[in-house]
Amino acid sequence: MIKVAIVDDKKNNRLILADKLKRNNLFDIKFEASNGEIFLEKMATLTFNERPEIILMDLEMPVMNGIVATTIGTSLYPGVKYVMLTIFDDDDKIFNAIKAGACGYLLKEESSEVIADMLVNLWKSGAGAISPSIAYKILQIIQHESVIKATPGQQKQDNIFQLSEREKEILKFLCQGLEYKEIAEKLSISHNTVKKHVIHVYEKLHVNNKAHALHIAYTKSLFK
Amino acid sequence: MIKVAIVDDKKNNRLILADKLKRNNLFDIKFEASNGEIFLEKMATLTFNERPEIILMDLEMPVMNGIVATTIGTSLYPGVKYVMLTIFDDDDKIFNAIKAGACGYLLKEESSEVIADMLVNLWKSGAGAISPSIAYKILQIIQHESVIKATPGQQKQDNIFQLSEREKEILKFLCQGLEYKEIAEKLSISHNTVKKHVIHVYEKLHVNNKAHALHIAYTKSLFK
DNA sequence: GCAGCAATACTCCATTTGGATAGTTTTTTT
DNA sequence: AAAAAAACTATCCAAATGGAGTATTGCTGC
Image: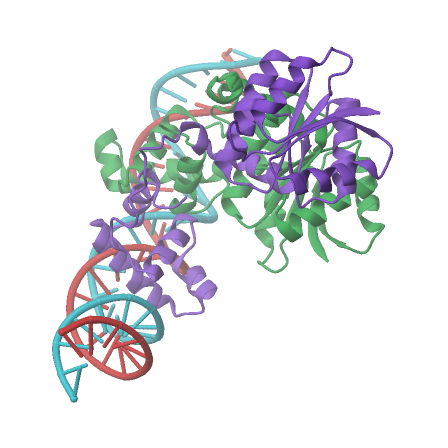
């Protein structure tokens, strides 16, 4: 059984999808979540063995959307695979989803057989679960390369974690390997204050230690 | 009927592929060619209506390879679609083929049904004809952007810090944000041992805390 | 056989960190 | 002017980290 989780804000969508997946006895739906925030919370409560292996993620959700959830999720749980399952197929969304770490992008209109097949394939051989029309767009993205180097998409990605200026400053120092005390000296503030900022940064990044925070900062290249 | 052409230097490959396509009566094989040069010559002799709509192109061929042929072909006959049909799946070949203008990349190992399906799809809706494992690699190309930026001269200096295998393993886990305990569990060793390894890593990296070590690991891209 | 190394495991100890809680002040937004 | 957000300060406590030392095992090269 492939352990999966479904993240979508529409209850009906979750039901339909769960139903599609239940037809054959290949999938074990570990949990459902109605937005990225709740998804991350539920993931945090699970042990390694309880964790879903594949996440079916909607893009548009309130509170925390699928891009941000995937960005954080791929950092925190590297073994887990994220498949975007959505009705949107515009270049920007596709590109951002891939950059966030998605290893699949299926259109909701796909039949249950196709979805199930793709997921099984992804699980078995690590092959990408991609709708053909999405694949075509990805090819065009690379062919024109404009999207890769250009930045309209990446600018929107900028500051997805909503860090305040001060918090970004603190995180940058953390990345340089400074200790609280040293940061405090540099900024002429108390090390207690630094600690407080750090805690806020962790909350926004949904992590709870320095290494995880740095991992996200580096892999998502928050600074350059 | 979908008008296609087969370009491959091995006669046997052409026969097998032609055979695969002939099973259902969907494909009209306009011609075969044994290299890019001959392919272009044959294309030049045809009128618009005689021209194949989809070219199945091998990559490695004498005289003129598939990349060059596709590059020239897409310029001369913009309406024609090129699908790479090859056994190679390394990033460089995939990337170059896409840049050359390929709108599909199928592995020869795919079943005749899959190949036929993909081609029909490409013909009908312009969807990309891409083997799932290739799709996965394309995602990674975009995610890491490595191939796009990488230059041939940039040979990564392997193991400049002389870390032992175990130490590299430990460092990799550190980068993922795991704590000593978690690493210990993963490797089924004592957390004391992990600590010892970490200290050794720090010595070899000439640092004295995790953040500095991660900074080096990421900026020198010790991994991947 | 023996020296050297990597990997394993442990202890003691000081420092750093993270979490919770409880505030004040300043700036921005409404 | 009131409300909200951001920045600042502080303390207590527990957990994680880092440093230094000791020691056993197994493997490799001389």
